[in-house]
Image 1: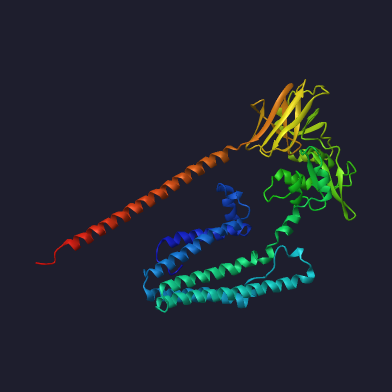
Image 2: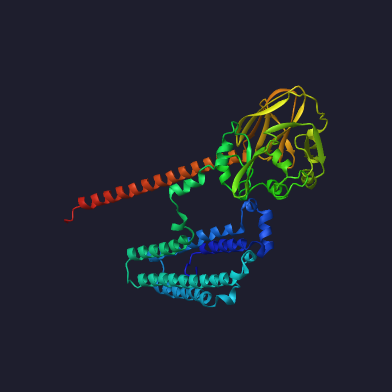
Length: 475
């Protein structure tokens, strides 16, 4: 950094410092909150430490720019040697200081240490100290090697090609040795061993004999909300995603991981909520064997309700889930009251609603009823991007039972369709395509201009050479 003379180093340094400050998160809360609440898109990132990716561009960029100028001889050699020595003393000294006296600056304790057994916590802390010492010494060796290569090149001890090749090798060794910590031979398994993860169990095979595939499975033999294997064979009530909807996470926390005292169920969940999510099979462990419980009270993909229970807010809606009958009653937040005002449940014992076609972004239902109905759908309500249609005409739908979709359906036979087609995605896709096209045209234009310029230079050289060769040197 201190070697580079050009002014562009300052904006790279500024961006780097900004990235470091952002990565501190709650440790610099006022600064972090400023970006979180007022800078568009910033709060979409999963963790604040993602900002450190910026440094993976800025620092290598400055390093390669400096190497380019060194190999081209754009800097005075004495100036370079003086600055390289100063850089070596500062960075090398810091590495040596951390390696030898790291305990002075760090406690080597973590907020998550409470999860570690007390008997081994001292050993873990000792290992952390060793890791800092070894990495400090390792970094010191790489810094000395890099400075030595630059000195050897400036003193004409090695030529340009050897210098570039050796620096590239040093970079490779640095990246490879660190990368191998996270991806090594222990992370690879044979294909046959991998495929064993996807062999169906006898319980899976039993469930898969179900003629209709429009059901969900809850697997309690593992943590259902960190297990992905079940989703390989079935539509699962669980699974894992780092950025799931908060409402669904709240259902998990308050309804799907608690005992159901109201229904005296032995399972650790509110069975009414499991029923409304169309969970037809529950896999559990009895002794040391897997068993399956066919849930005959599951409510299918959609159903008509007779009673509407309006509640004041989300807390009341969650509380109401503890004691309601989802087959007969729909819980609706009062913000959607306009959707249910004036509804009177009629009687039609032959009324039906069935799922005709299923895709994650396109669901089609058929309904038949002689009276107006309100239907609940066993799909998660998410308003942005989702549109509902009755016989091809866009129709409003609303949220019920805290997380499900609901719709008011007129009497008669109708086709209902839910489509996920977010305008933001398709607009962004169009902009991305147009931008890519413009960049491609720009690159082609630059390449064309470069080719024409080179061709003109070659023609000029050829013309000059012809002129010189055709000129008589005799007086």
